[in-house]
Image 1 (tube, rainbow, N blue to C red):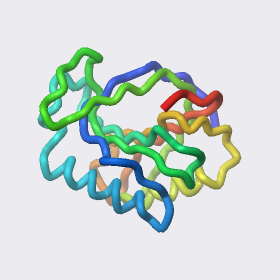
Image 2: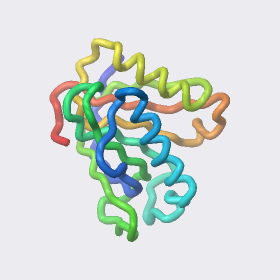
Image 3: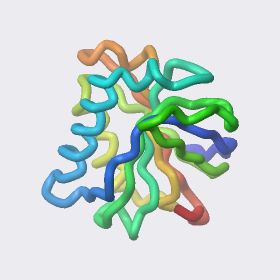
Length: 158
């Protein structure tokens, strides 16, 4: 897996209330509910100054490794000075080093499989800001591609 440095960026969207964890499938339920809210409320349409239609799902503010609680955010990339509409939040993702994994196949199982492989790998995870990018390649749930960026190297603050 190659490492690449990505610049900082800003998102506007929804943040999960509180934290979740991977224990007993809790994150799947919690994050799934946030996705439902994001879609049902058509949040992407309410975000001003979007840089693209891609949707980002970010895992951050880890309390340890992948078994510990973490925060979750879904949103779209915007200009750093974009106004935040009422009822939405912003998230600044700092510049970091990443390993990129491409999840391919049927959604959402292909993304879950990619994460299981990441958890079992011996990569030098930073547990900073990890994220998935859902763009035009992920629209067909029977044959999707999702880029998964995992922060590596020195840990960046949450």
